[in-house]
Image (cartoon, rainbow, N blue to C red; front, side):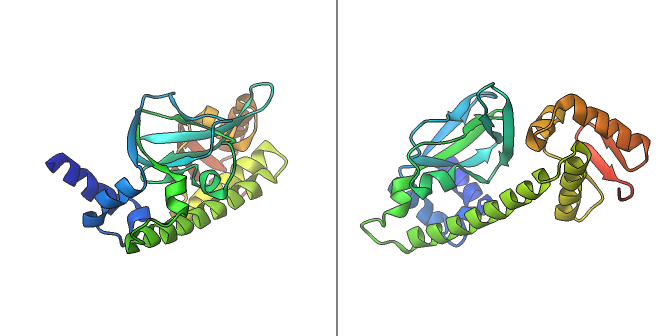
Length: 226
């Protein structure tokens, strides 16, 4: 009981999805939504392309990679989802028949799965905290839409250099700093930018030699504009 109370308190504090709901209402809310916790080992799939789009998740710990694959098996990394963000909510709540992405654990992770139908259908008690959850989800989905729009803008650039610099500038703007860590390793960054890893590594080395950026693994600094 003490462990459950601590878990609920932590979740209520960390996840914006439960803003304004309160710890005392979470147990009843999770029961209403058919919530269940899932533990994933690194590389384990939470959701697979083609599965029924009837649920979505909240990352409680660790991180998830959301990806698509073309017919040749080439991966496009859409984004990494970290705690306490939501994953697959847009597809599950849109009425889509099936999931169009793969969601796998980027590291050992714990995810809270919620049934989408329980979100869009008002509960019998018409509880106020259920309505508040819907508003919080709408806010979260709006934020994700803005993030995807930023990625579209980055990928609209033709060259590897322009995509890389557009991404780094976007991160710098988001963090209000010219030196920062990114959430990707080199292969993940290449997948995110839809470029070959070898071309990306060569471009990072070239820009570093020109004194435009410095980098070490996932740590970057912008030195002057290109």
